[in-house]
Image (cartoon, rainbow, N blue to C red; front, top):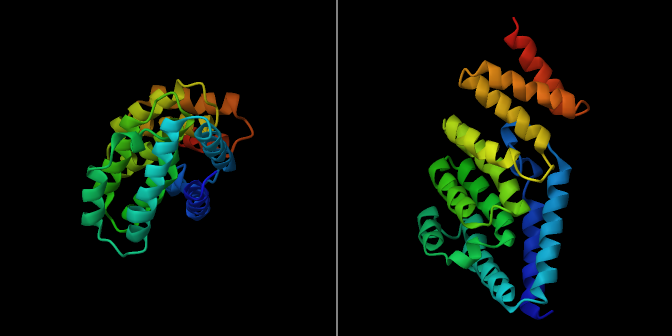
Length: 225
């Protein structure tokens, strides 16, 4: 592994460590699920395995690292304005946005933007990345959970429902209890009580020991008053 790749690995690990677990799910719900991070680390490990065998992936990872070092880090450290960052993001080569290694970068940047009240730019980044990365990947699935949370906070509940419904149909099981619970909340907010009840009951039946099952019961109790 060359020096550039080692630097990339260190920077990526640093990014993962500095990204709060709550941003992989919905930080507004204050429930941290470690399994999401565990699987994300598996994605990155697999990426490095493939890197050693695939010249195309090597180039993508190198370019991703360069963007992290030359654009993301200065922005996060307030050495680059958001306008300058967005200009560079909008010219970002598609092949970088196709990599799973871009996920921690997207989460880190959008978190900073959300903290600054720049939700529109955060949504733009998540929407762009969501549309580029393969829908068959776990990174796309984890991104969907985060993306839906931002959509909900922006008052785009129907769009959030659509994103989570697609995630619900995938083969991945990590965070499924949260996805069904969040769908229940969103259906309830859209006055679709029948679908809301269906989602909450699914959580209770299939994830009885989950914190989301307890919350689902509280919601259903409120619906029955």
